[in-house]
Length: 385
Image 1 (cartoon, rainbow, N blue to C red):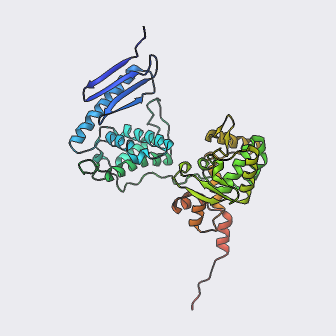
Image 2 (image 1 turned 90 degrees about the horizontal axis):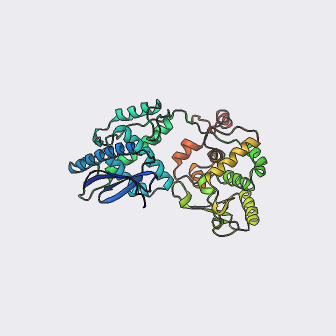
Image 3 (image 1 turned 180 degrees about the horizontal axis):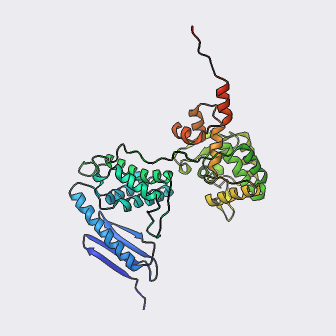
């Protein structure tokens, strides 16, 4: 006789949470209907007592949300659910959706899912920031939290702000906005006062290039393409040979692999063209084959993790200390900083930035030699006529 999986229902018709095993002995799931649509989600554990507690908490939140809709008000929990099911969120890349969902749910748990959105204030932002800095907020699957800095705080609270801004623009079937007014409008989020944005020096790049063949033949190609194009890791590691036009000397950067969904055709340097021509000849590949095929599955591109491992290995072989964060991104900052003499708009277009503000704030780095030249060599003298 086949053993049935454990199941338990909480609530009544119209407001019910069902807890169940997908298979006997398997992980626990919960099922709930929102606006007539079933939403299933893994609880990520096997603790039935904990699952029941979570079920009652969810039921309380659902009942509060129904009341909120009837009263034309909004709870923080419902705001999060609506935003995470909206096209504004679902149109983003899967990795971005995952990160936004995780951060928003964490903020909602701290503030309280049944709390009215209109009661939020700057004090709530301060309370959350203090708790996170002290490590007092933990994920549901761990017992203790960890202290974080202003950069992480800004990212987490920025998702809440995006959801609030979305709600002030989105209209319901009755024509009313989901949220009439953003209660946190004008509130400043924590920002890191001295952000660490390391830049790879050119002599470091040359030393890594010297040991590249000892890491992997593809790693040398990756290093030259990254340094010669200044593109993000996700963009160049997903290149296909069909995107590379060696005769015209251009590369098509696909929108689906760009952080901002930006598609361009941009010239490549002679060093990049020579390297890619040799790589294509060695691989004997054309069309939709990846430029950086994974060693175990040539039909797919190398993973981000593999590229990171290769770069760390190169730092070790070159007897250099890797940066504490942003391994490949240090090369993107190098590319931008070495082109400071050109118009900023053109640098942004060539490197794949959609706006010059991000380029100026996070990528173009101050260097001692340029500062020295500015101090010693004014461009003009102001004299009386």
